[in-house]
Image (tube, rainbow, N blue to C red; front, side, top):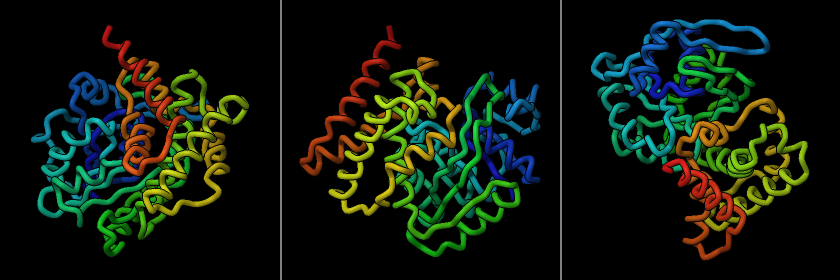
Length: 305
């Protein structure tokens, strides 16, 4: 399959490399020319379990340099989705599909506004990766990837995407109700990302440290109450799943933690901040998620100094 990945961060680079290794015709679009130059020169270097391998990927910073593809996979930060949607529409042409595996909520809606809801697919992945340098990542852990149609329509398109991913060794499950899956990922992220970002700990330490466990659990439970107010049904064992995910990626620094470490904007507005906005809409309290959001925003404000 002809595939384009938008965004050469940790996860975009990882999936581009895995799909290229799987034999797909792969293009990686990244707006920063210096990152493209590094990948073109050195390939994508993946560290895992003490071993290193290099995957050659065609990277471009000009959208006109990439032909129309059958599938576009979006991996940019949530605050860049609006810009990426226009790029995705151009790369998908009249018939290509667009898949978002991004963190947070609101991404699929922005993509659908550009390419049409029937061609948009969304999902989550439990793969963990850390960006070490442009084109160089540490693959901290593998995990399930779940995706489905954003339109609540037939899952045929999703199954085509899943087949392409599975052929590349990326285990994928298809669901007809991807919104429930996205909500569960949102709540897991709400319990992990801000806590690890604020404290400097890795994901596994969220489980090992009782103080961190308490804050992460409180953010998750508060989010579950907000989901119920919004009419969303999520699995009751999410607190258990929270710690299972944290331990599965124990050595990984969360994406938000990596952003804070590098003094970059975070996706807090699309995660804990999204929950706070819904809580305000439904007239319920969200003190934990509000505090986490405000603390991350405070740190981000210092980046401008």
